[in-house]
Length: 416
Image (cartoon, rainbow, N blue to C red; front, side):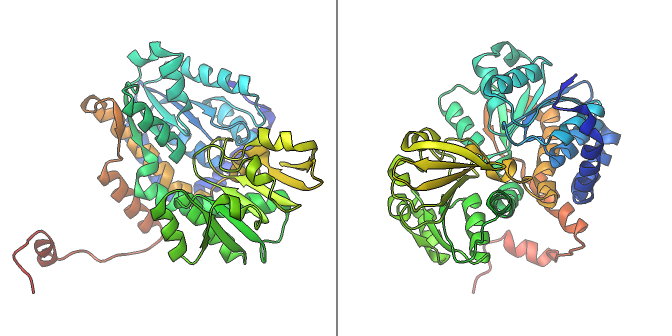
């Protein structure tokens, strides 16, 4: 079953998926392993993910492992329609198209859940949230789940703290081979890609304000600086602010940065990072973009209230004419600009994240009975295996501890 924008786009989607596979050697190896072992035999896996060519590689791996795979998009603007069509033509159940309405978005999620999955894979925790609020009958059949992104993990930990989370979920985002690479290198590059595709603006010489200095914000600040920008960081966490300062960036409150910035990029996972209070202070022509998961970081209703009109001026760019006479430019409706205005992270970095997803799914299929309801970490052996597989694929060799070194590290007797 499927509902996509145009099944005739499948040929181009197949080409793009094959290009992604070339850049994802770890996932190729895992797929071959799954073909032999069939870890998901007689299981249904439901995924709410950005429907990109890289996600297609993961979906195909799960199907190779014996799963009935059903996929919905995790953001209204992130679906690549040719990829969705290719997945549908390959026999994978997919319900996703770019530009989907909020009503249709939840229709797609419910269609996915109608398949009564045993495992869930989320990017933003919308499937899990829907199961726990409106589809509680599925709590009897869902065995376990996993969550891909920072914002989703925050939601799930809040659920767990309230005693509301009723099945075990693994926080993929929190494992090193995900956040140290996907969040840092992936978000940094893809955000700048989205900015340049959307606005075709020269970054060199501009003042770029980065809101949030977690792994995503650090990557964005690094890439903006590398392109010649003067970077200002805004933060609420003292430790992260200190890190930004030690990395040579200016650190200040958003209210002060608002009057200085040419480009504003958010990646905090929280709401109201940029509001009317800040917009009133911004320069004429300032650009606003978000790479956090939900479209709440830039308060778009505030922007609309301050404006006398707004219009679409480029693909994924809206110009807001403020009552003050100034103009502000919003990328991708305040949604994930790196996926809506570009193509998301490069395949090579998603090779790590989706290897984590695939191996964790297999681990959950085998070990779910031993886990209590709540948020769990990716087993260390999975993280280490993914690292080693990627190093092997890159042709990189590393040292191995000698028996004497291992003994020394595990003892306390030897000193000066």
